[in-house]
Amino acid sequence: MKTTYKVLAYIIAAQVAIQAAAIAFAISGLFNWIDKDGGVIDKAILESEPDFTGVLGFIVHGINGMVLIPLVALILLIISFFAKIPCGTKWAGWVLFTVVAQVALGMFGSASPLLGALHGLNALLLFSLAVMAGKRVGKVT
Image (cartoon, rainbow, N blue to C red; front, side):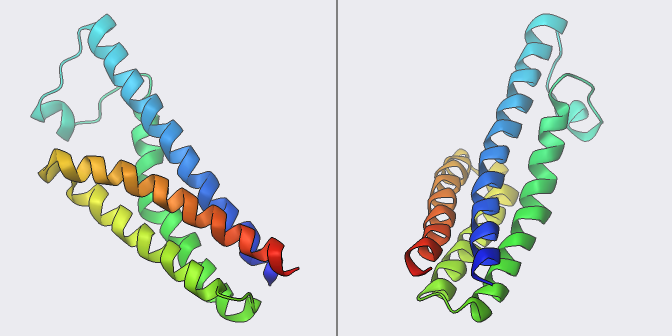
C-alpha cells in the first residue's frame, strides 16, 4: 500500500505537469492560428469546435483536470487510510482539497482574471503537495 500511495502521489504531480504542457500547447496553437491563419476568437468560435493545431491541448487540459486528477486524488485519499504512513492521510487530504479548489477555480475562472491567476498558483501548490506526499513514503520505508 505504501508503494501505491507513493505512485499515486507522483502521478498527480506528473499530471499537473501534463496540465501545464497541455494548456501551453493549446494557447500557442491558438495564437499561431490567429497570427498565421487570421483566426478570430469570438463567442461563435468558443461555442463551436475550432480546428487548429493545439486544440487537443484544451481537450486534454479539460478532461485531465476535471476527471483524471480528481479521481486519482480521491483514490490517494482512500489508499492513505490503509498505507499506514505517518500523516499520510493528512497529506492526501490536502492534495484532494487542493484538487477540489483547482477544479472550482478552473470552472469559475472566466468570471474574473484573478481566479485564472489563482488557478495557476494553486496548480503549483498542488504539484508541491503531491511531491511532498510522495516523499513522505521515502522517509518511512
